Image 1 (cartoon, rainbow, N blue to C red):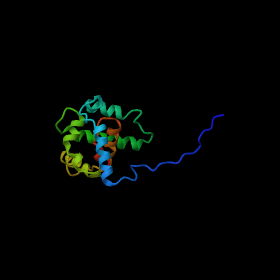
Image 2 (image 1 turned 30 degrees about the horizontal axis):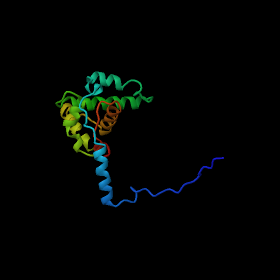
Image 3 (image 1 turned 135 degrees about the vertical axis):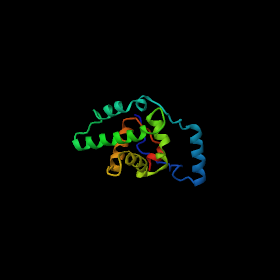
Image 4 (image 1 turned 30 degrees about the vertical axis):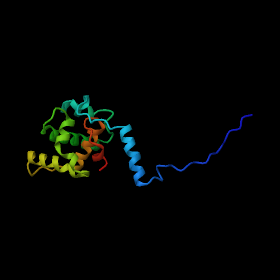
Amino acid sequence: MTITKKHSTRQPLQAANATAEQARARNSVLRERFPSRAAEVWWPATGESAEDVLRRLTTAPFLPVAKATRAGRRRGVMKVLDWLSSLPGDSWQERWTVSGAEDLPGVDWTQLPLRFLNSQAGPQASYVSTDLSTGLLVLVGGDVIRPSLPWMLT
């Protein structure tokens, strides 16, 4: 007959009880052991033409059931791509990087494309920042643009 131990006493996690100095030392070791990867500037989806991106992101699996949602996503993707196409770069990711949007936290980034879109269409045009946020969400979900993690956390 084998006797198994049903319960064991859990030891407190060292990380949870660590001092600030111990945490910094541990984090330093972890950064050395697991260095961050360099951000890519090109992959197949970010190199697609605007027409191909729009076609891909307005079909399954990106196609929502509600027509209003479909229309908003399409408008948003078109507006973000229109703005990004005015910037230098060989990929959507390169254009996103040079846009300056990563320096603007939260929804503040939408001021950049809004300024561009309003200058193109004139003062009578009405652009809603929610279209831009929705469009960017679809572009990120479709792997066309990869914003940095610090920016995503804002």
